[in-house]
Structure formats: C-alpha cells, structure tokens
Length: 262
Image 1 (cartoon, one colour):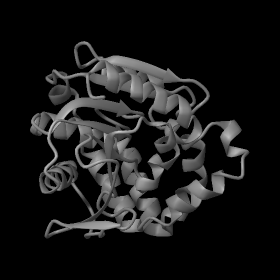
Image 2 (spheres, rainbow, N blue to C red):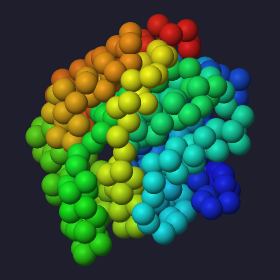
Image 3 (cartoon, helix red, strand yellow):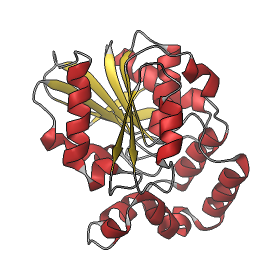
Image 4 (spheres, rainbow, N blue to C red):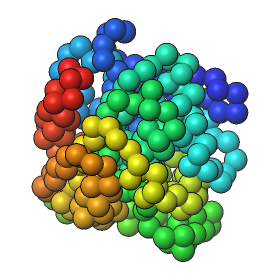
C-alpha cells in the first residue's frame, strides 16, 4: 500500500506491472474503492503499468470535510499523476471516475492520450436528486442507501449471488462524508460543452442493465467526442467490470491495442 501526501488530502494508490510499462490509470465509482478493478486484472495483458487510487473520502484515502467540487477531484488526479511522473496514460474512469476522466483530459491533455468513459456521462442526475441522496446519508449514513444502490449497480441475476454482500459491504464502509462530498461534486457537474471539445481516442462502455447511467446516456456522452467508439456489455449493470470482468477486459484490451497503447 502506498500513500501520496498532496497536502490537503492523502491519496491511497497502488501500482501493478513494470515501471516502464504503458500506464493505464483507473478511477472508480462513487461508494467503491480501488478494489473495484480487481476482477479484471487477471484478464489484462502483461506489460502494462496499472495505476489505481482511492479518491478523497473513499477507501484508505483521507476524508476532508464535505462537500467537494469536481474541480478538486480532477486536481487530485492531476497531482497524483504528476507526483508519479505519469504522462500519456490511458485513463479508465467509471461513473464519477469517468467525470474525473473528462475533466482531466480537458485540463491536461499531456497526461491523457486515450480515454475510457465507463458507465458515466457528462451530466449525471439532477441537483434535486443528489440533494435528496446527500440528505439521506446525513440522516442515516451510507447504509440508508445500500439496498436501492445495489439495485442500480447490479443486474437481477448478480443480486441473487453470494458475491453481492461483498459489494454492499464495500459501499457501507465508505465514509459518510466522502460519499456525500463526492455526491455534491457530481451534482454540480455538467461537462457537455468541455467534453464536446475533446479530440482524443475514446471508448465508451455501458451495461445493458445499468440503473445509474443507462446505455443511451453513456452513448450520448461518448458521441460528443468525434470518432469515439461505444460498446454495450449485455447482462451487466453499473459495474460491468465486476459482473462481466472477462468481457470488460477484452473490450479494454482491444481498445488499447487499437490506439497503440499495447
């Protein structure tokens, strides 16, 4: 385990693979930590430098007082990559991680040469929806949201498996302030205009059963970027890297090969 002290926040991160490998950076969703990507790692090709981190208020990173701004989350990713001397990475962002990916690519194109926008959008939900969710967390903790979140995250078939408890536990063990803080960041974000100005290789990934960012929403955001590819993973919800890890890794690997990152 490694920690990056950025002054106002300390970010937990992990690097797998050779130091001279092509860097692939992963940013996970609201309510998860960097273990979100564990299921796909065995299916990725050797030789990549895989960088994962817990955003502020999640996992083993520190939890500054809420609320957070999306610009702050983007700056956290930027400062971490600068600290690690990463350039020209493929940045894979899921849900809020995909929003961070969009913001980082707009701000620092020297850091990002290819973008994977997984189960995300330029704008997610409404201010009222996020205000209700933040109020529920402040009143009853993240646990108060756990059951409806599981329904949005996973297909009916996956929710019937014993593995569901692992992901429910991951969710409810995130700090309440971190979940609320990142919810506020999503609430205040509309990247339609800046994302439409991006010109870099991009892959959009959606899950057919996603109750948080439905496929049409992901496709709409992906199509803001000229030449972007889009892939639908059938039978998966908001976290297809968990439900269909082999399919997810295959799609990601093909994209990395197509853009010369392998």
